[in-house]
Length: 334
Image (tube, rainbow, N blue to C red; front, side, top):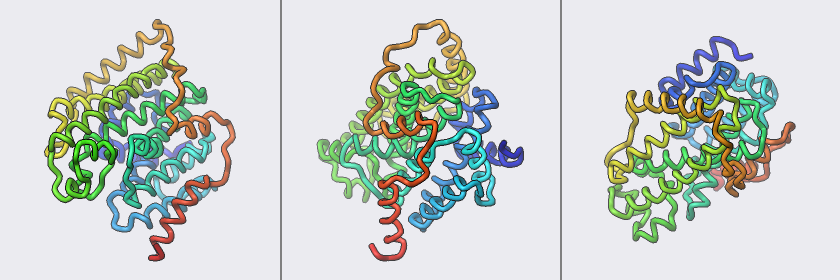
């Protein structure tokens, strides 16, 4: 069980750090909402430490050690770590899922860029679809089809985030758009990073990324009826709130360089009402055939890991490799 003071601290962290998730979480039943808040708080704290700190490599390596302690049942003395350790124990959380997130954060620390959409999806699988798979575990859902659709939602939400943050990321020296798409548009990455502007090429690439997100949102919807009835409104809400962010980017002419799309309180409330209605009607609608669509290749490892009842105890070779690179960089050897 999560200690009351720890869950309250998680709730406060999400209330100020992730308004969209905080809004959607209100529609989840308490038995899922509280562990979800703990999960998101741990992910949020980890992401902030890597994103905002000067020593990014060191932050990832410290996170590795914290994750080790969580899975050893002796978490670091912090509300997010204690709460997440309780979630890991209560739900038999496969270690491969938070380790995928750790690998994505390591890629962030290394300043990795992605040549193709598949590369962007590889990254999105780790930092977002992994969370979608973990949310399924919290709902006690281990069906492979439902997990695949949850991963679709995570991918779609991350592509929306990338599309919203093009300017903000560029001003921080980060670039998550597919490099081959930029080349097709005649946009030189280094020149764009040196002076970010909402040129026609950047707008078209942003529009193209959101178009792919929309396809994933449509597939993700097919999986919601496979979730417990009381969980469906919260998931529909997350889907509509994030899709609303993409809609704001589109209405701005796909300019997310000079402005940052936001959904206001009224729009979030409308999304919550729409989600509640959709969840109610989902009980009488036939289950869409799209639920059986194969998972995107980039998330197949997440679906496999989450569907297993028992998870491997050791780290993956891919994670070990990227952590070794970070350790070498941290020691000035690379």
